[in-house]
Length: 240
Image (cartoon, rainbow, N blue to C red; front, side):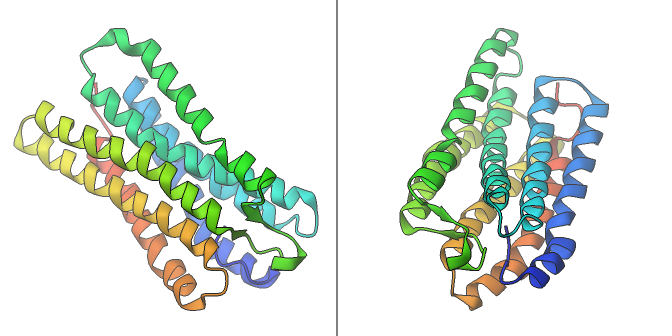
């Protein structure tokens, strides 16, 4: 998924960069599920589980270079990557509706809706050549301009705007100095993580821009790790 210029470089980056989210994502998910089994913890842990799955699939794809399986595992990983960030909106919605236990069916409906929206990576990435991974790219993922723009529009409409709306709602709903502090931490962390999402897709579009690609590889993993930790610490316990 990241900095894939040759097989040797890919293995190095996988060991240094891509394996790390698999470990911390799995760790945070397990810790959350051990604390409680609620819609809130299910939502937040689902983000970490799918994030780990996304990086795992991307790592697996590297070991199937020169075969169709490489593309299959990679695009499936990208689907998990997009879908997992939808749980920020779902989690925020659950917090806003915390006292309304009748919204369980809506929870499932929203989950299915975002799952369907995220499938755009398959039909636009594969059928419309939005994602290219073959000999012409030296088996390095390369995104088209159309795929990049469509992805950013999807992120803006279905992730950023709803998250902004629910962030304002959360600020109004919850009171107390400690809770406000945790809430602000969560909101900050979410938008830091969404910044990583936008940056990752730009990274794969700027196929030959080594300056930006190097910047992304160095800076974004740090931001993503920080965001994940803050998300876990903000509402990692006693949600409902």
